Picture 1 (tube, one colour):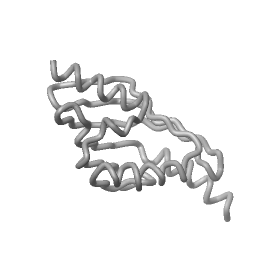
Picture 2 (cartoon, rainbow, N blue to C red):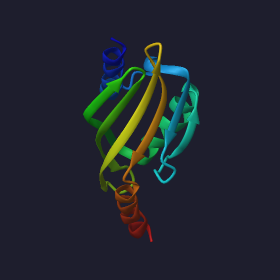
Picture 3 (cartoon, rainbow, N blue to C red):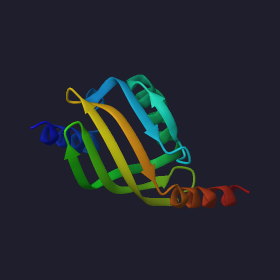
Picture 4 (cartoon, helix red, strand yellow):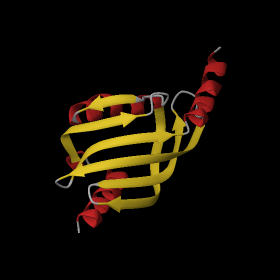
Length: 131
């Protein structure tokens, strides 16, 4: 069944972040108010721009899936981000919703929403310390 296969692909992405799971033309769309938010088009942009920006900002970062709902070529994941800002060590803990699209067993799109206020508050602690 396609939904089961796609659910397994998404679970594998969360566990490994294996780049081979991404379609070459993946459309990676994150909430604009997310620290590295915006739209990243193509596997090269996700791996070459988005991921290095995440690593520069966060010393630790996990997207923890709590509920995975699959239907044909779409997978919806409810979960939590847990991390720590690199510069301050401030913790981040925020819920997220990811809507994944898959094509031929590869991730073709991600649409993300999260509570960016919680992340902004952790970053604000960093800015206050720097002032």
